[in-house]
Image 1 (spheres, rainbow, N blue to C red):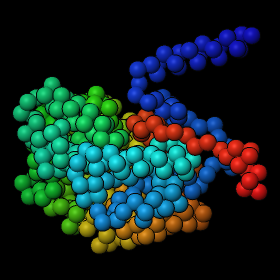
Image 2: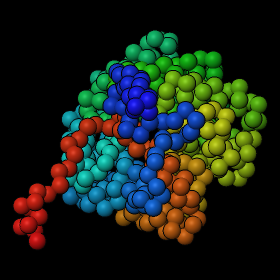
Image 3: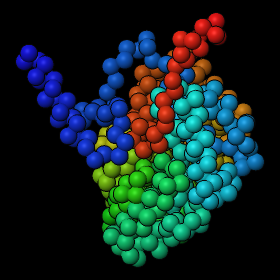
Image 4: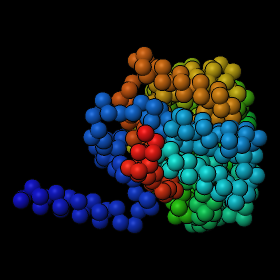
Length: 393
């Protein structure tokens, strides 16, 4: 009886902790572990479901639902990244896609919602063209912490009503290099003392509005010249400089509860990355777990950016990204068949032992916890009735 009483106390305490949380995950994050606790024995793990969970698909705006639907279903895809051409830029347009995706999750008997994502940073980088979209971050910064949090709350609430679950924002890069060709006004500024608290406020604001937040672009693009969409830039700053300039904003975003951190394509030899882009570098990515104590989802930036695609085909890049420690991959090619080949390459790498099966499962658990926290609720599928089974037989 004493054991039963102890179990009841633990259950009641857990329930109290979860009160007021938005759609709490079924897979709780452990304080002592960087991944959700799972007691399922390895022989019961579903390889295809784990691979699908960590993949994020995109497609060309001209591709319609009849072509997208079977690919999502076949690969058990965990996330979709939408862009303005996919849905016309309107809240109603993105909501229609979100509705289709959750209906498919139900029909396909998925255990978790399909995570709907987009970039809604502010200014011109706002895929939903609506009144709730915030201004450029550099302009938001003028209003201070309280103003940034409120603007992002409005943004988050608008995205949630449009069926979006995870915003790939805020940008945490501190812009210090005038030859930067990709960050510009997407950054809150050039001073870490200004940017860091604003990144934290943005994360909190998005949560206030009801969507998840992704801090990007780790380890920081603001100090590099160039644009990884064209060619991979190099940031030669020392670790000491990085710790003073770029690190504080990522720390602030994580402390505020960021759900994901996006790692990008930049050479950072000072951080141990050598001649490997950060998103493929285990020494750089591992800093998120060891140095910053981040236990959420580590997401690789688009594997189809020009700088990456020029050197590594998508299937190879997908395997490299997972092997380096990313949990979730933005395939980003807009060619569904090519994205399918990348998924196949990951499966082959796992079966051949080139990718760690346990680490893949841990990544899937982290992603699934994120899907549970912010994903839209969907109607679970119902098994066929006995009469129906009899008719089928």
